[in-house]
Length: 273
Image (cartoon, rainbow, N blue to C red; front, side, top):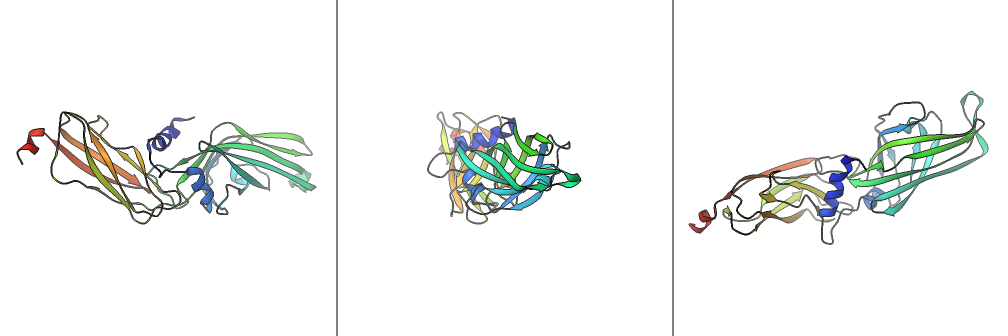
C-alpha cells in the first residue's frame, strides 16, 4: 500500500469511542462519484477525466463508461460493489451481450467481465470537495476482460482514483475550552479544546484532522470525529512533563484549517496567580 494511504489509516486507528468514520458506508450513502484519474493498459497513458457520475444512494454500485477509464470502447460498465471489511471494496463486472454488441470497424463484443479491488479512505480534513468525503483507490492490480471477434483481451487497470461519499461541512472554529494559564508540571497534564463545524456532520460523522508541534511537547489526537447530527466536539491535548514554550496546534475539516498558538508557561507562573 502506498505512503499516501498511511495518514488516513492512522487517523482511523486513532479514533476511539462509539463515533468513528466509516468510509465504505459514506461512499455507499453518496449520490456522486468523481473519476479523478485512471491508468489502464489499453490505449496508453493516465487519463485525468474529472467526470462526475450519478449514483444511487444506499449502494456501492454505480455505472462507469469505459471511456472514463481511457478505454476506447462505446460501452458502459455496471460496477457491482461488495464491502470486504477493513475499508476494502470489490467491484465486479459481468456483462453478456446477446445478440453481440456491435463495435466500430466491424468488430463485436460478446462479454465484458473483471474485478477491481479498492480501498476506501476518508479524505484528510485539509481537503474539501463537493463530491464527498471518501477517496477510493486500487489496492492491488486489477483487470477487465473483453471477449469478442478478436478472442479474449485482458485490459490491466493499474490505478484508479475516485472521490465520492457524503460532503461534510467545513471547520468553523477551534478554541481553547480551558481557563487561565497553561503551565508545565512534573507529570503530564491535559488541556481541552473544542472544534465546531459550519453545519451538522453528515453520514457517519465528520473527520477532523489535528496536529501539534512536530518536536512534541503538546499532543493532540491526530484524528477524531464530530458525530453525525452534531456540530461540535471537545478533545483533550496532552502536555508532556516538563515542557515549556510555544506550541502551534492545528485542526482541519472540510478543507478549512484553524490554528491555536499555545504558550506553556513554567510551573511557578501558575503558583503565583
